[in-house]
Length: 183
Image 1 (cartoon, rainbow, N blue to C red):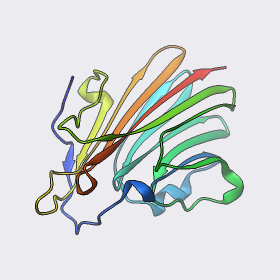
Image 2: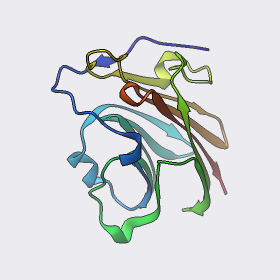
Image 3: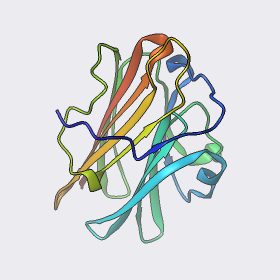
């Protein structure tokens, strides 16, 4: 398993996030609302004539895919400030689940699992450093450092995203896997 050093360590007052507060959203339309969230890091890539942006947020993530005038965004966050008519799917992240759909000529599948922290705060896949974002958050006394890891692999017909978000105060973490294919 590949483990990189964090791209950044936040130097801000700590907010303790809880897995039970997380929600998954699949959102269609523009993403100016993302500016209202705490974007810590982002990277952009081009895939199949689409602009893809990966975001590390405050203990969560977003993935946005734009093609022409259409855009779809995956968001795992404690809150979302988008218009409700943009929301294609919403699920509480307190239990494992899967979502599959076709949107804007892309087959999209998402899986969320919850796990105990046993020192396995690494991504399962191997990703080059340029295809990862890793953020360490301020550590609470008596707990390990919370981490968000985002890794992706871009192929000619498929985009794969894996994320890991650790919540040491709860001795747990959330792992997500997304696959987007051209329909």
